[in-house]
Image 1 (cartoon, one colour):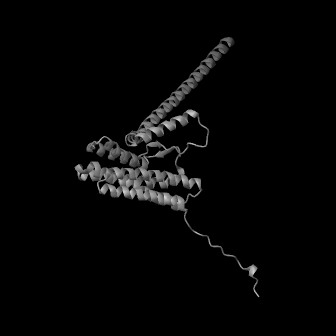
Image 2: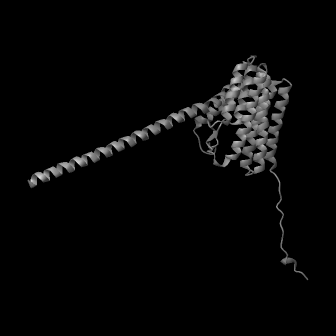
Image 3: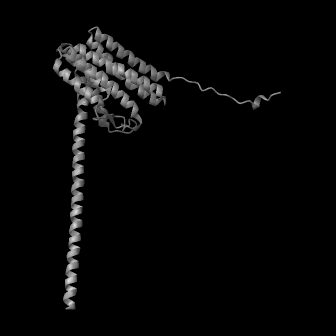
Length: 283
């Protein structure tokens, strides 16, 4: 009779997904799709709020996944696909129908640049995720572009103003280029919320929240526009700092080389003088 204890035990690894982070991602995707439908229906304010709420869910799904130690390759791919809809396609359609339709073909081509730039940006981010500096984003993040577009719509609606098409055409092209550029933007991922901070920082955060709640339609646009602009400014500043550092190193090497040459000349002169003194002594 065969001994049951001697039989090999085969274990089956159960496959599955983490529900909570994936639900936040899908809710963000739902908001992005709602924004797209609202844009087609001509309800641009609702479309803008759909993008903003999608950005909130996008922020939450990553935080929840890290908090629960539930980060998976499936979640990362799902998040990228949702971002493509919410922060690539939805803002491109919104800005086209809202401001760029008078330009006809040029308008939808500018919108397509946003879609293409978002796809390239997300693909590059996924490939370079392991080697990226967590302090910075390489290229403008897609949520930042989408939030800038959405807050711009709300900003104009708060003043009952019509968009200036040429400005948004240029902004669309510039922001699409920033998506695929090597311009660095602060990520904020290195901020440790567990560390103790000065009491004044809490007061400042509270004041910022109060201002935001009082008039979000007016406040959000300058904030996100400033974020989109800080990247090029930061790159120029860092480039100048690097150039100054290189110049200092070059000058230091030149001084060192000159000092070495002077020392060598001094040694040659001292040797010549010593030789001349010896010859005089012999004579």
